[in-house]
Amino acid sequence: MGKYSKILSLILFLFINNTIKVVQGDEDFIQKTCKNTQYIDLCISSLKSNPSSSNSDLKGLATIMVNIGIANASDTYAYLSSQHSQVPKSSGTSDTNMKNVYKLCASKYTYANDSLKSTLQDLSMENYDYASMHVMAASDYPNACHNAFKRYRDMDYPTVLKVREDGFKHICAVVLGIVDQLYSIDNHF
Image 1 (cartoon, rainbow, N blue to C red):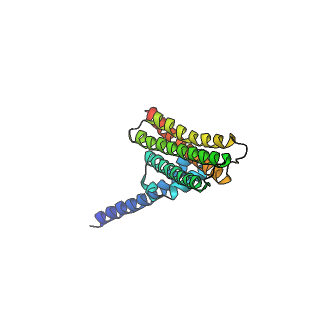
Image 2 (tube, rainbow, N blue to C red):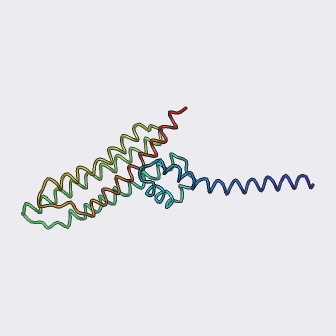
Image 3 (cartoon, helix red, strand yellow):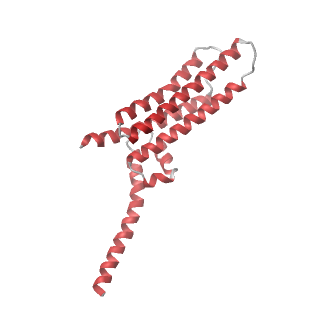
């Protein structure tokens, strides 16, 4: 009996120790994954804020970040739609231009959202080339919004929109970094 209880104790010790390592390993995995992205701190904080990331593989982490991008694009769309509805209804050219720019910008964030939804499908099918392409497209849509403001001298690009644009592009850059890692692993074997 003494021999079996020592073996059982050893197995239990290894199981508990490995469980602890798995939890720590998950945090290490997130850190290691994020170090291969352009915005390490954003990556780490975003993934650590999502409880499912501790049980996720690399594709799961990419999926979490894509969903964060989708939420960001949806939130920015809602912001732009609210700004569009707040522009006074007048016959002035300035107000008409402002309404048109907000409407255009909202549509670009809808397209960005759609591109990220396509990225989710690409990830599920392990089509990492297409996933990268869709993330790059999503990241580029806000440029059209920014450029629309530049067309009119009397309209400044709102700071809050610039912050949202930068945040969205940074999220997309993190997604690209993770997708690049998936692509490397997929093509390594």
